[in-house]
Length: 518
Ligand code: PFF
Image 1 (cartoon, rainbow, N blue to C red):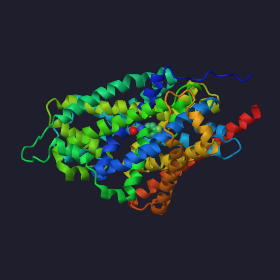
Image 2: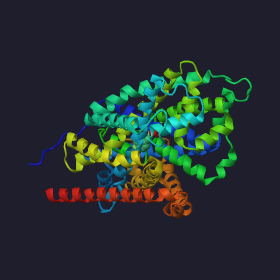
Image 3: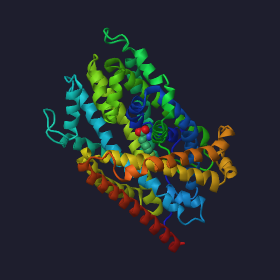
Image 4: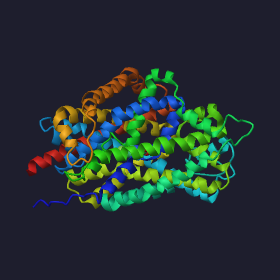
């Protein structure tokens, strides 16, 4: 006899809002965003950023909440099942849904490793391990030693980084094993307020920095904020700036990848999605633009000046967070405490995001293969642990960039396009509009009906088209990849293709089994 499993659910409305906001507020807010702003000419970046927020980010937030809740009504928590419930006549649509499991898994593989560095650094800071380092070169060497990229006076091997990785990994798996209400919701309700307190403490410290070097009066905190906010309109002509801004919006809001779809599937049919989605998105933007943008950039500006932050940011997203920021904090009294607060803030932001990345794969195994949560989590844990290894051991060979590109950029835009078409054109805008507003506490302005139907998909097609036009060939030909890294990048691509194919095969098997059982 087929056993009917009780579906997991959220404990409270605040719980799901905190959890979606927890997924959204992450390393992307405090590391990726400042690096993007600084390397794209400061304030100019904010115009395409806000345009993308209103034309892509918000619509997709609402689309995912609505589609997720819709799919949950059919006992599906992941994209293959949800897409199939919307377009039953199309046999292939469920395979597009595979991206909604594949993407989060790929992001998880590298995201969790970076998250584990923040745990390590928070402890190093408390212990004063890098307290005496005062210049870029030694701090950089500290980071490289930790990552196992060079032997130096601080680290002889990858041992510490690996230990922190294992701790972080196990923590994530334990949280997930407690389920939606008992695990994810509980940790997010705890971590989110704490995260905001840490960020506020740092924000106040940064605002009160004044002009630390009197010989350079223009390197003051006002100009630091000006660097972020003064728009340079000429940057708007660059297609790259637009693509990067749109990519950042997807990444930061966790939309276009299937995670929010999965979270929303545990809602009940009459639960509000309009106000909840808006609240989660606003919380993320507050954390990103106000907190994320106001800590690292102005602080780096007053100590290093406008020229140098641009070049630091361009030299890699980690340098700003793991090299510049500890250096800045080392110049202040109570450096060890502030350093701890900075890295612990990153860790809290990271963990509430990484658990969300696990949930689609776990939910897929639970729903479509009827596995118990324990078994699903165990299987996910074993497989993802193995998949994390290449990122750790071949960090210097460009694996993170490769995974971030396919999992954290390309898949997002592709998946968002499929979701928008399904929502606005297959479900139909009239049905979609009433589905969004079922149980809603707020009415979305009617202009969004037009935006979601025409502007959002056109914008997405434009981005995809531009990408194919400008980047397809260079990416495929691995232009810009050093000769010694090519083999690693190629192996990563084959690996990704294999993972995708296996997931697609699992979808096929699941559907065949269901057909036989019905
Ligand atoms: N939004 C997270 C961040 O800003 O760090 C990253 C992320 C989490 C992206 C979950 C995608 C996702 F599904």
